[in-house]
Amino acid sequence: MSVVKARNGKGYEARWREQGKNKSATFRKKREAEEAERLGRDRERGRRHGLPFEQGPIVYAELCDRYLAQHQVRDRTLRTLRERLVSSRATFGGQRVREILSEEIGRWNAALPVGPTTRGHALRAMRQVLAAGVKWDYLARNPAGADVVPIPSPTRTEIRPFESWTDVYAVAEAAGPYAALVIFACATGLRPQEWQALEWRDVNLRDGHCDVRRTLQDDGSVTPTTKTDGSLRAVVLQRRAVDALASLPRPIDSTQRIWSGPEGGIVNLSNFRRRVWAPALAAAGAEHRRIYEMRHTYATLALAAGVPIEWISKQMGHTNIQTTLKHYARFLPATDTRALAALDAFESEEACVQIAYTPSVNGSDRA
Image (cartoon, rainbow, N blue to C red; front, side, top):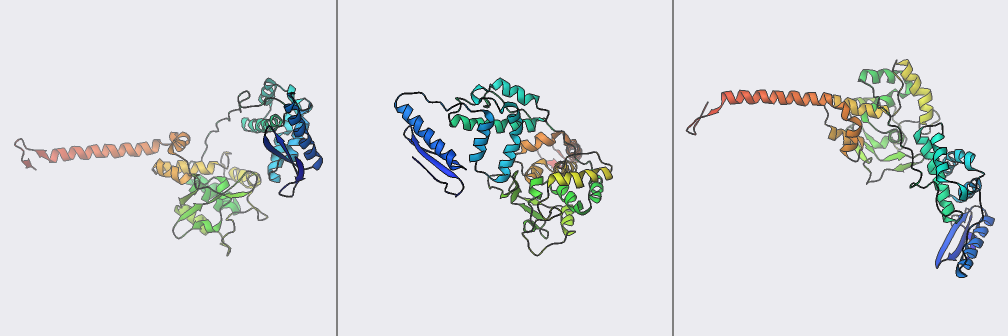
């Protein structure tokens, strides 16, 4: 049982033995580690004497602070978690965690004046902190657990793709220096986090394909796409996508990103939406829609052109065709019309063959 410097050199690690097992926790401050180590010893001493042990009372705001102090993640991830805890801290900050009821958490979350996705983020953050409180014996069970307070279901967003390439080119022309990006995204169906991380070494204009190898994460880092993920794929580039890339100056360094922000960094979607996307839609006379609609445009225009949905599914990186059908089944009538026309034509040819070719009664054939 001891307090030592953390292995990564940041903070201090408290070590103790409890219930026959070695336990440890890392804290940013030495006094916090020493307190944790002392409490671990006290719990073990009490257990050996048959005494029940409970941590002293702690309010929710303090538990949040203690959790954030020892949570070793990227700075950006920590900032995001802190932001998502703002609402729950405002409501439950001064309340003892043992006294927080699941019903209260449910009412608080349902009353938040934001969408279901943001409410879900706030609830998950609170659940994360309270789960740590359970491990640290500040409370017996998690009042924000999934079994008692479910995550709100996100509202299904209506798909609003561009209806034609004429509409796409009108928006692209209004997007100025990002015209090629608009055309490329609509012509490939890449997710925003995929084209944000795309580098020149990922594209082969001569053979007409693009390798999706990495994606941009929520914390701003770029990570390789795993082999088990359907997102890792080679996308066949139609002529519009090739022409869009060919219109851009190609750098000597192939590891440079194809698209970047004004200062050379990764394209920030919030800034792109405000400064480029929304003004371009307005200038082109198009209704406002999400940036993600460029991916939907690829699928719907491909279906309208008669491309098999199985092929589209693989190009878009869906794990199975059911995902593709769930989003785009209602855009299939144009394909169905072509299929029906082919069947009608086939039936007409069959009738012609039957008239021109009839087997004889005695088994011999005649024309």
